[in-house]
Amino acid sequence: MSTHQPTISIIIPVLNEEKYIKDVLFTISTNAGSNRIKEILVVDGGSTDRTVVNAQKHGAIVINSDKGRAKQMNLGAAKATGDVLYFLHVDSLPPKDFDSDILNEIDQGFEVGCFQMRFNSNSLFLQFFSWCTKINHQICRGGDQSLFITSKLFHELNGFNENYVIYEDNEFIKRVYKLKPFKIISSAITTSVRRYEERGTVRLQYHFGMIHLKHHLGAKPTELYQYYLKHIAA
Image (cartoon, rainbow, N blue to C red; front, top):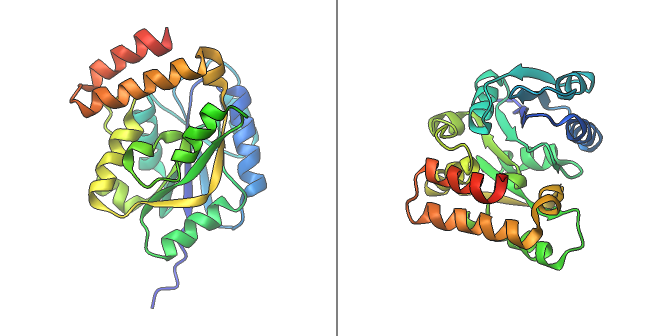
């Protein structure tokens, strides 16, 4: 009988996130509940600020990559040596004992899942969307909830589709749902509302909804990105 205890590789794609990379790495070190985090891989897409220096100061391994979150996460996964990959956005802070929660689900036989999510805001509008993350349906998933997946399953699925400059998490999770039971851990990751504050809460959520709809109706990755550039990035 195997006594191997699975280990976790945390993968964080970044680009010019000198403040938030410190916050997330501090939270990881504070909230980790096991000694089975094998490595933290910060995959940098060409930052021109102090992101790389701050990541290294806080104990992460920095990997240089071409820009693009799908490319960055795939490169992190290729370099990772842990049994479980944990993809984490830089402005999402994992809850207390997040690593133990993930490993418990792996021990229960789940190969993939995420946390529920809450925003660091009292907005009732955003609280509603936080509540939706309890629902186990792919439409309620998103990268801000983070994602744990066995390395084996990730590579069986050929990783993230690098044609998707945006929406890469959702496209990947859609494929996951077709193959495996998806586990939602009841504790919640805390996500910054900074992007909503910059662009307008209702406006941004509306455009995210439109991207979901366009994908559902068969829009190509380039069409989704053009919509994003016009309505969100502008």
